[in-house]
Length: 314
Image (tube, helix red, strand yellow):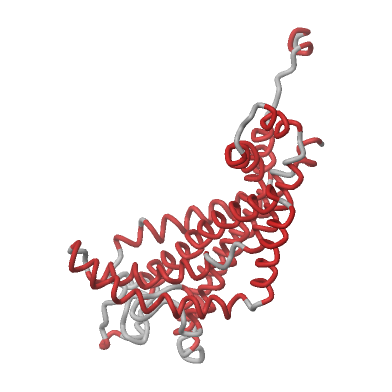
């Protein structure tokens, strides 16, 4: 290193340091690659598979072969195709429900923390009330209410837009589940964002924005909220597996994805009926499900450590 380099050392940004720490975390990087593999299988390779709902009773419980890599189920449907198509539903439920809950939680928590006073007290009491009610009970009630809409929506879309009826049915069947989970999954995030905003709004750059005459909405959405996105990103990665788990629970109870569509929860439920004779019907979708959940949790933990401000100072 030359004297000039020593005199003028190159700076390193927080995001660059975070990427470096992330790259050193083997579990997080392994989880990231497994997630990429799952996305590739479920959203790219699945399009080249056979119809997951094609019934062939003559070929039920077939052993793995070149035509059916994982064999077939009780109705002769290709298990590999059903796992991949089921993964589409489970992953999309996790991602879209998380996106809905994050959008609501950020805005609600930020407004509450920034307003303060009586407004903050009332908004937080609403959150406390909803948190006191069991989450799954609320989701089941809301999902049952919204599910009545899916049949009418399917007919309306097919008649007006000439979409494929099977594809439209699969889409409208899971949309109520997206919103049922997302509309009630923002409560914890709103409290996290509120605490962050209450701390940030006392800093000098916010006082400078107020002195410049900026409106409250501009200060909140352009100056304060961008500074709470770090914890939000970490929380989101840890929320996705939780929503996937809730979808699996609801589908296992018969309250989620409707037949003949599949999700990992539906496949695990179907496989449990043949646990003593056809154990692969339970183990294979359970393996995909477990790998995805573990990978998302490892990735979330890695992001949390990588974005830790205290670690950045070390």
